[in-house]
Length: 261
Image 1 (tube, one colour):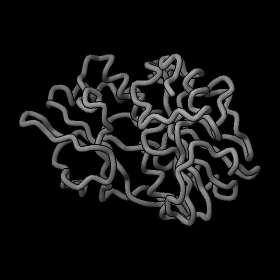
Image 2: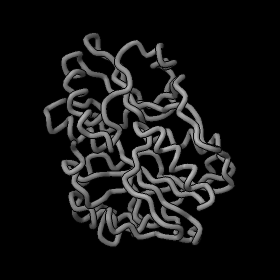
Image 3: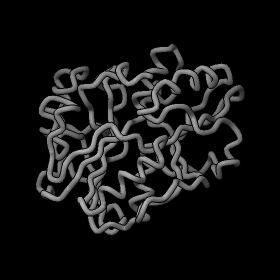
């Protein structure tokens, strides 16, 4: 099944609701904000909100629902967090257990949904500025790595900072810092450039994403990644939680340009 209007968020969400499940939502709905999803029982929601507040580069909160709230009108018309993503990941006792296309049959009145800023938004800003992102041309996702940097803990939630990497020439890396600094609600500026060993990263040992080798004139540029909440969920070992499937984001009606400082 193909979406009728790949640039229209509402049409995309309707296609997801009907079972269309692309591997990645990157470059769908150009210029619109995409978001990471985390759904938790209400008894853990305030702790997770504190974790996000203490680690805003990795977990920038765009919206937080009330207990039992599935509709997120501030994010999009008729946007239902239980049906309107391409695929979900269900966690049990801190371990991924299922990857359903929708979670309405798992929804409970005590669940609280968080939508967090996503790197697809700052990538849009980089593309608009003329920077070439190689994984876009390849149709892949950027590689993801676990670092030796600990997130600030909050209650049961802790864990290592997860980063995504994009190879860039030094002059483009400088421009990327300038551009993404204007978007703190979607991860903001890079957390590290070059010398990956200083943050405990071996470029040949990915923790997710796709391979993206460096060219001779490039250095690795690392941004805080929206997979970091998965690290926190593993540490918290909650009996039940839900996230988006990696790369299959929530597509909102918001415009990326409106998030710029």
